Image (cartoon, rainbow, N blue to C red; front, side, top):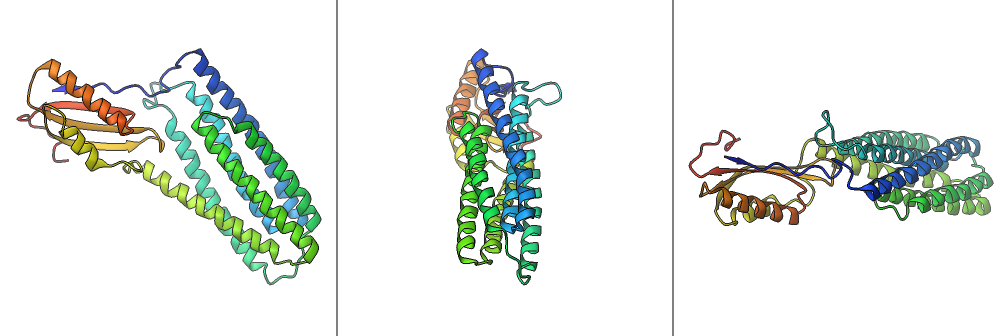
Length: 308
């Protein structure tokens, strides 16, 4: 029985001085974007109460969620420099997903609460402070636009994900600004609750999508887009491979795919074993598997895991 040692996680150790600088620059950009977003979220909550605007308060919730995502990204960019250790043999990548999952829970609950509050207030006559909303919307566009600009050239997955979140914020503030201008010149007070409900529906949709993806990762569901039948057929088609079993695939964080498999071979020749393992690894890497553990067995060998 032969065992193939898995490759180390890409963050197992620094890949050179330049690599460390790239992570450091990414963490610095995420830190700046986080503080800009968090600071403005506080201003936004106060402004929403001041203007009596449910749309502003709803967008404040959205920005709070993005601030948490940015904070998690910043923290995890720093963790990436540490790599894996004695306590976390796969590294800290799953914390990114867990942080996103918990943020999704908070955003889902918050958006539902704000929608209920908005609906309950529909029958109450109140006119939001339109000029205050316009000032806040312009400020929001400027702050979120600046934070997005800081991350627009980021190379890391954390930076790209945070950049997309901030672009959503920019679009949300553009909608609030347009609604506030219409309210200012027409007096249509229904614009504010309509915007609030639309923003909360958008937040809820994305939060539930995040929760669904995160729950699948936590429960070790097959990675998205992973074709198990194709992988099995490809491995069994390799020379000297007569069968396979106990194949498992999962993802650590939604991007990093791990696979374990037992391959049955028709020879005990160590040179052939090495060839089979190299060919299997190349085939799996071509299909997006970054971390493979391959065990070779003879056809006649009894494996206690074969029927599990």
